Length: 274
Ligand SMILES: NC(=O)C1=CN([C@@H]2O[C@H](COP(=O)(O)OP(=O)(O)OC[C@H]3O[C@@H](n4cnc5c(N)ncnc54)[C@H](O)[C@@H]3O)[C@@H](O)[C@H]2O)C=CC1
Ligand SMILES: O=C(O)[C@@H]1CCC=N1
Image (tube, rainbow, N blue to C red; front, side, top):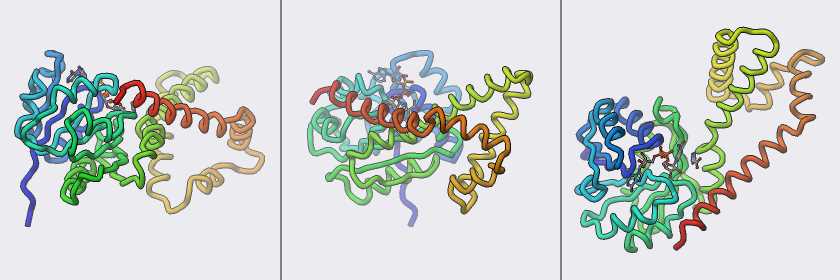
């Protein structure tokens, strides 16, 4: 038997909500099933025009009658927003996408005994190729987990994480991860310009190379190190580049970057209070 389609409400219609809404709409979720609360009038208008969803200035009004409320505001204002939503009569499933903020904090701020799925999506959700880590609190039922998975897997892969403590690492890896690839793209293009390529050639060759590498990673049975070795002819050009990267501490730098992002998640939670 097919399940009735849930009504979703996004609290905050910024970058990440936009990617999720765009991805959901593209993959068949009707606009009338999506409600968005967003204080900026221009952003509301853009969301309404682009995605044909119902937009509200009031968080409480948007959240009314929603089966699932996606908390998509910045971690720094989550406490205030939850206090505003405290006492929501419909007992929805709460899905938070905020970095750092724990399900215990959310539960306290929302009044206690709430069904909460904490998740960490990423912006490629807009294209249906997002990667989301999820964890459900103890109050969640199987149906809640299924609903959260249904929403997030409509816009990419959804991976259940064993312990909530690992969510800051998920944030550092896949939540922030697209930015690392974009930085790599920026650096590759700039380097190509310095080697004499024109900007358009550098851009097109960089983007297609990253796309090709990403597709090989996801579609090939071989792990990343094997794929790398296949490109690296002994004594060839790739080896010269890889040795330069590794000699400069590439892996250690990535390790420090992911550790810093993981720590920042915990700091955001601590700063938000209890
Ligand atoms: N941008 C990203 O790649 C990702 C972001 N996240 C998380 O998503 C959340 C939102 O981040 P972004 O979309 O990047 O930020 P954003 O600043 O683009 O979006 C936040 C939106 O909330 C709205 N807002 C401000 N005060 C509000 C209030 N009181 N009630 C309702 N809405 C309010 C803002 O006008 C804005 O449109 C954050 O908690 C972040 O940690 C998670 C995964 C990836
Ligand atoms: O930078 C941030 O804090 C958010 C969380 C993951 C991606 N963007």
